[in-house]
Length: 295
Image 1: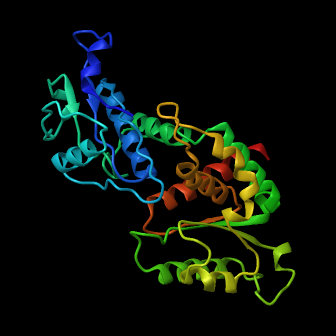
Image 2 (image 1 turned 120 degrees about the vertical axis):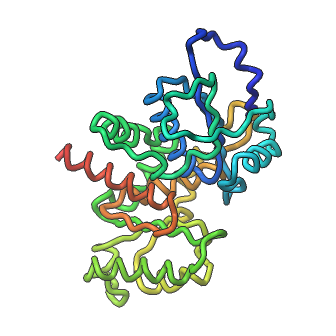
């Protein structure tokens, strides 16, 4: 996908219209946080938001958060944008008074980047968070089928373990997750052959099931599912293509299926240091709230 500021000349604008944009980086949830911050700023400053393309990776994020110039250089290597001599923007205490036609930020990532105090600002921010949810019909249908095969949302808990490349202390992370589940679910007993009838676990992780760091988890809990247990249900995902280049999106979208299945359990455990894992827990809270309202 190209990102060329020269194309802006074809957009009908008014002389009074002002714009805001930023540079994307890191994984999906970091980009989601950046987008929410950007939408809020555009709304608050009454500027038109120019949304950069979403960066999707097969495994790990290749473009981390950096300074404006370094980030722009890294993105240019991916042919995502052309350098039109845009200058770094140094924030003042109140950016609403900036006269520039375009405010171009580097990173807008961080849940603490923008602090909202006024009730109307907080309400708008909360509405963004609760409405910007995954809604691809193919993915949602696959997720529903997996959840149904496990036995429904009341019959399992979700564990989102991010311990792949870039995450340290794999064994410690799995140990913490194991202990948290044991503390909450006293009835889980690896010696109990009927344990699957009581508490099932769906483990979403970015490592294969044969890696040593998660073997203790399997040994501790008798009934653990992973996404590869449902390969037959993932077939429709293999037909989804990027309309811009016809690339099959299967490898890029697998983490989202994992995320949504783990978030549909009656409880969700997250990896402390992962924002993507935090998003799984956030989706779980929304799911449980909607479910409670229906009841």
